[in-house]
Length: 323
Image 1 (cartoon, rainbow, N blue to C red):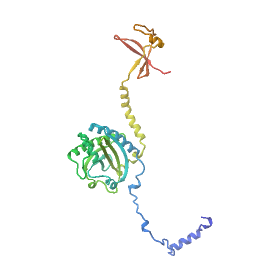
Image 2: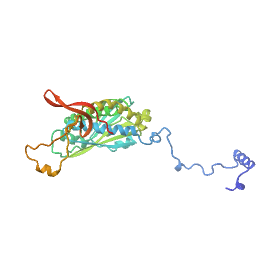
Image 3: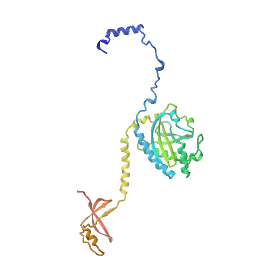
């Protein structure tokens, strides 16, 4: 717009005056209802942004721990992978579940509210089949409840899940898990409102005969008071965990067994002399005053050759110093 197209102060005041008197219709077309959309400022959709690095680290640690626990339970190799964290409305999440699904309501202190530990039917049937040494064939279970035997296996697996989750969170925030109840039909679940935002942590379990998924489903409102902690890179907490591991790591390193060897003497001779050697031949050598002792091939210390209780022995003199 050029300078001469701008309104003067007198022109602006004149326009405002006629609008106040009603001489000009300030909204000639009226509102267009079709273009108006309601927006809920309290909606959680607007605040769930970005990654949660600390939560991702916890998930990775849990997967490693749970792999060991499940292998020990089944006495069979099982691979556990992290499927990531999905953010969705609870109504959308329910649409991903089938009947039956092992849905377990849990309380995770110090978080407020109720969370879900979920195992899909495919995984349950394959775990049961493997536990009892089955053939690996897929059982038909659509639309039915879990049998008492399947429920017992579910409980044993969940015990491992809860224990490993507690351990995985230990370096970030100490938690305690209590099971409140269980359900096999997702449509009967009323723990959350349809529009509530949930974080679905997925873990993939793979056996030779197939696999399935385990979900840890957390309401966003449950984690919101700890959002800053979960959004951090986790480096500070990781360093604290590392410090706690140092004494145990040092102790295990010091208990490691190594091979030591010591060359008593060395001499170079020609290949011709080697080929001429016969039984009883003598090779003159000069025995040095001290000998280099190596630990797993690494120079460790200097020692003196001697005798102890009738056996050849090495007497420590000083650490080896690389010049």
